[in-house]
Length: 238
Length: 238
DNA sequence: AGCCATTTATTAACCGTTTAGTTAGACTAA
DNA sequence: TTAGTCTAACTAAACGGTTAATAAATGGCT
Image (cartoon, rainbow over all chains, first blue to last red):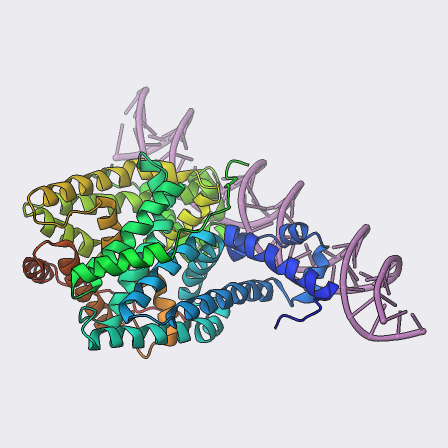
């Protein structure tokens, strides 16, 4: 995958891909401009068509790039050596941090889900099978294990996923709207940190048979996984 | 607002608006075609510009139309005459049913949130203030009341909202992907019904101080609010 | 009621710009 | 030299938006 000697061409191709991820996540497939991608990658527009068949192929490649990275990270967390409940909380927290750090990815996926529901989209099936299916399968066995040993409440494992991840997605999804009607900025580090803590503590209360134990594990996980610096100064008004 | 005699012009304008809601929710602002909207509304393209300044103004009008309806429905539920905890569960359930019935609205909002985060969008501030702020405020006082009387767990009320609504949004948002990797279709009525029940029962367990009472109320609410028929046969392959 | 003047609603045809995509050829490192 | 990269210049089509002309209401006046 990653060659020892990234040739000049490889670097160029990658510059294009990174620029594409940015442009597509900000404007969607239809809204993205190929000329903008070329400019951001500092190449001629024709070069996009040298490396990728057309706009849609470039879009699919961008999607695949981010999805692969995400699934890899997630699987690593799910295979840690600790109790199923703790792995679940770690999984949820990592999910939160990923959205926090790579909001581009999240925007990309959201738009693609809408697009796919309408019947367009060809990339989804591929990344679903390749990246997300293994991850979801893993969560399923962990949830089952946690219930079997009496650590986690007996409930549908999918329900557990929806509870664990839904609030994360929704927090960032609704942030722009909350910014407008709340007296604070939900994307400010202090607010993000509070929400991050609250989310995990909530899962500790909601998922575990023993709420005391849930609170304990939540504390452990939060201590073990400090909030990453989000090095994005946001240039909205520019 | 709604005149006793909707004139011919009013009907036309409304046809355009409905067509716009559909087209924009399926393709986004950039992807939507004004000619497609005109065709769907069975009018000449120039009529769009007779009733609305430009494409973006039409988009804003479509957004405002759906947001207004949503907020109205939600406020009605929040003012029912029952305990704060029950109102919260009813609110969450109605939120679920709304997404189920009006998936177009949800797609529209999601895309707009992404768009707004990137700095574009002019419609968001208006619909935020007019439609969503009153709703959120109402939830806040209900949550506070529920905690004060010892019915609901003591937690940040925003956290409560994120938990209650996040899973709903996430369920439908992720449905296209789940369709690809799960052995069942999450949008099939039986799956939707199961998830609907599970979500409310989960909140009954997670939000209430007394889990028994939470389960009881969840059962009551589910009985009082039967799942609506979703009269959308889906024509994806067409 | 019936007729005309004025406004409102609607359309066919068109225009300028933007956009994805192409071509023909130049540069560069082995 | 030559295969692999890369670009300036171009094209054809699509798109948002306009215009000028027409059809349908509306409201007064007799």
